[in-house]
Length: 363
Ligand SMILES: Cc1cc2nc3c(=O)[nH]c(=O)nc-3n(C[C@H](O)[C@H](O)[C@H](O)COP(=O)(O)O)c2cc1C
View 1 (cartoon, helix red, strand yellow):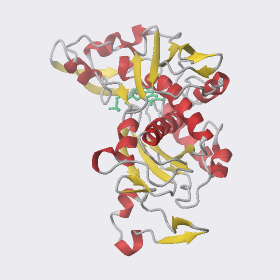
View 2: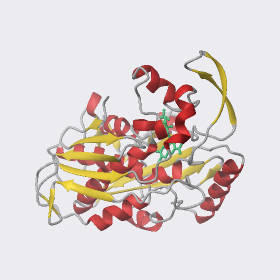
View 3: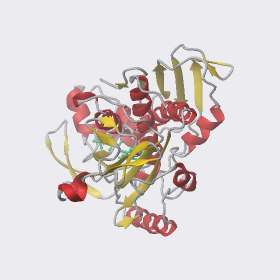
View 4: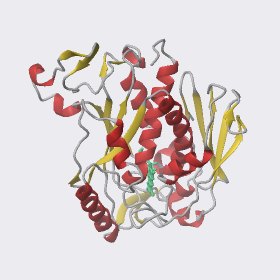
């Protein structure tokens, strides 16, 4: 099983939804970085479950416990390990899905891959719970990048049919980020949050679920990060963003829309701005040939509707090899998207900091 990522900083995520803890070890962090764990706590609280009526009813404090790698709040160069205890487990909810896999969850594929030995309680290692350690590691990278003048933030672009405005691709700045963080539904246009909330509550009421899109931007990056072909910034970001369960698509810059345009409508003209080379538009999402061009890196991740829904669904019995009907029990998010916003920021930070360390370019 591959739950590792990174070339220069190597993260290894471990645990299952209902094991005693989930966690991450991070190797390759520079020594001498001061980390305020209260800040890590606040970041992780944005992802933590059970905080409002649009989230799962499973409440978890998501308290990060630093096992090693930090001495008096300062990184010491040894691998840093964080665990987050699982305190609110109800494994009995999952007895049925051992035999009758949930449609669109990983129960069936895990059963095939691990020959029935998988831990299926709460989705096991495939659970959204594994994004808690991802957020712990990502917050550390966000902090280090912030010290270099590189800022990353995400907002919800769409839930169901409710839409927010997109970031200004060429003009997005840290000021936009400060205005949206700390909102349970981070959006640029306030009324969009109300419409999104209604979509989620409507799905919840019907024992159904809904999906959506998260848009993420990174500003302050130097030109020249990333490598051609297989180690480009797009490749690196896509690899880690697809590690967030529920992600089914990613696009950079004008993405799929751009493919319907002419070159004249999609090319980003260069110009000089006080001695700095910039582009007037940012349809490339800040990346050309896999390498940053100094403009904001901009991408969108599509999340599918939460697979576990209370409505009756068709499935099969793995022991009897016959059709079966399933009503999923347990506590589930009617929409993954609000809790996934910090996960996307964390994933982008890990990818970009790793690319930064892997490059000879400095800020
Ligand atoms: C923050 C977060 C919370 C999630 N909560 C749930 C949930 O409550 N119920 C559920 O069925 N899936 C949930 N998921 C999604 C599943 O974990 C995911 O769909 C499943 O592991 C299959 O992986 P895939 O969708 O990437 O193929 C969540 C994902 C994230 C990122």
